[in-house]
Amino acid sequence: MLRNLLREPLLHFLVLGLALFLLFNVVSGGRGGADRRIVINDATVAAIVQRHQSVWQRPPTPAELHGLIDAQVREEILFREGVAMGLDRDDPVIRRRVQQKLEVLTEESAGRSAPTETELDEYLRKHAERYARPTVVGFDQVMFDPVRHGAGLDALLAAALARLRAGAGPDTVGDRSLLPATTASVAVDRLAREFGEEFARSVGALAVGDWSGPIASGYGVHLVRVNSRTPGRPATLDEARAAVERDWESDRRAQAKADYFEKLRRKYDVVIDADLSRGAGPKAGG
Image (cartoon, rainbow, N blue to C red):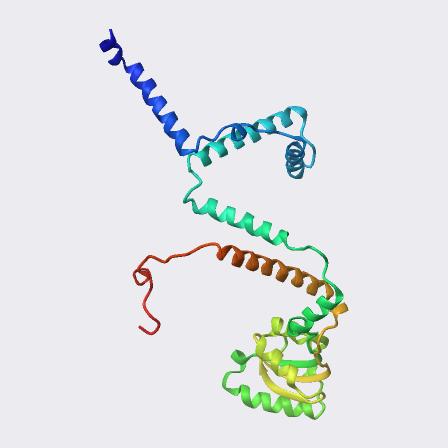
């Protein structure tokens, strides 16, 4: 009788199942109790409702809310079981996500008090170039197309410059184009975006009142007369307050992360037990 029972496949299956259950219990540390209890409280329901409303622009119906809660419970159960089985280990996506969440918590853990006027003034002083008011110029220009004029371009430019200096109107010189002949006021950084760095730098350095050139741009070659110039200067806090406050807060968050990591780093003894030359590329110049 006993011999027949020991040969029973069902018994083998039950014994194997029990062994796997015991092994899982050991691997998972025998977790139970609180880990097996899922609480859906008012805060959880409020978060579920908020997520639904942000997508659908309305609160869920009672039936939808029950379905959403069921989905939340399912997600929580599967997540806990996956963690218990170690499925979260050595997964770069999960590791990166956990890292990002910890960094956010670290940023938020630092004091959130608003910066004082003294702190903002000091920050503005340290980063004055970032917020400086650029030079502003007003100018006239005439343009010549190098492709159209070819080898005769230099002679044409010299003759046109002489005519302009003698009093000829800008509209009587140069090639037709959609570019404005007169620009009343423009910052040199915007000029760089529209005409190119070389053009903006050259125009920004010209003397007021004289026709000069040629100066190249992305459109062609120009003769230019600067009519007005307002020199660049450091920004006042009132002028740059919004940007300074934003950047001050960004730097505060970055510093909070760096400080927190440095504090954590001191808790660990990192040993590089590897031949780094195997993974390194060739030396520079080699």
